[in-house]
Picture (cartoon, rainbow, N blue to C red):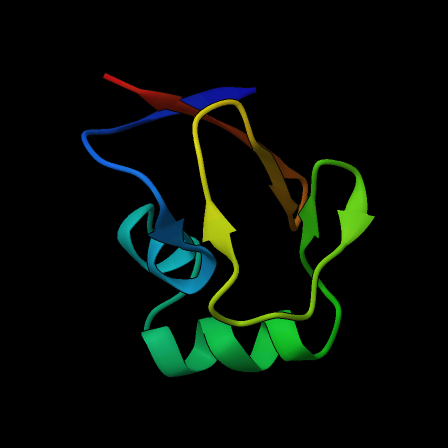
Length: 70
């Protein structure tokens, strides 16, 4: 599991996928989220602008990201 540090929360889900390099663009992230390919805290998440906060865990394409506010 990889830890992702954020300096404010909430952060929109699609932005984390983009900034962590898991997708090329925000548009691609939104499509994949809408298609049900992303899990947040173990559940399929289809809200493209889902607010991610400290302690959330994102799973996508075999990657697990734990969000930590610093």
